[in-house]
Length: 328
Ligand SMILES: Nc1nc2c(c(=O)[nH]1)N[C@H]1C(S)=C(S)[C@@H](COP(=O)(O)O)O[C@H]1N2
Ligand SMILES: [Mo]
Image (cartoon, helix red, strand yellow):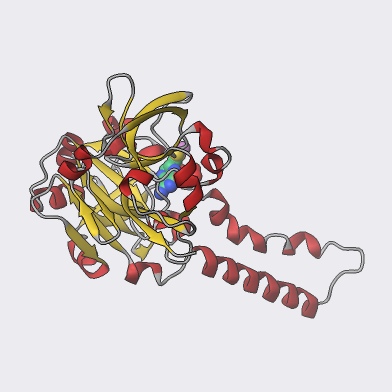
């Protein structure tokens, strides 16, 4: 993130350049300036696509009366709350910014959320969890505008979780790490475990009938897990897909857009799935505690140490939603 915000500094080298011994003419300076502007536009196009906004949607899931998909139009219509707050995720952390967005409490009331925690998931698979009580008590926003303008990706947009810490200093306990950028999912409590396997949706009762195994391994989930080996219990992918072909791939998708990008599907070679324990984990630790949404559950992808290098290079997918065999 921090890098993206620095694009505008690309224009700065223009100043020292004019101090060369053979001082450049006005045409040269203009040419350099045009180059710098063109490069800056290229970078902004790459990292802060304006089309992001219109295509963006936020899923409301978990322990709610009815899951919802909020498209950009709904997000805009629901954005009726403004707060002004300092923001430690910006370059100038003390500078107050005016944000407009949806009070998360509105969403929770509307959907009759039944849970003590709400987990926010982002396009990059980052996640953070906030106490329901605080969301109910304070105007914590899914912000869509800063200073009356849509936010670029570089600013954490198009949807950024913002806490009114200037007005309510007690919210400082939600420091930078809870300010989730590019929010795509709001999950009340933890969803019931279920996974789409090819054309079949396996529900909890189906998963309970499958054999499970235990592995002990260091994990590579982005946040919220201890360092060092963790005991994980789950179902081997080869037990979920008993008709594995000789060659080909198993495509795995999670909630986060980065874990379901059609341009860059996350595929495991069939032989890996056959030869070592690649599991869809459901429980962790000595107490076999169900993996909750704050940890990326109820279903996460995990590799036994015997899987070797792929365990280091393949993403450890949280919020697993589907598996499917893809041809070679
Ligand atoms: N989607 C998303 N949101 C995120 C993060 C992230 O990696 N992805 N990092 C968090 C952390 S750890 C901090 S401190 C703040 C500020 O991150 P920055 O300093 O990289 O801007 O954003 C938070 N929100
Ligand atoms: Mo951070």
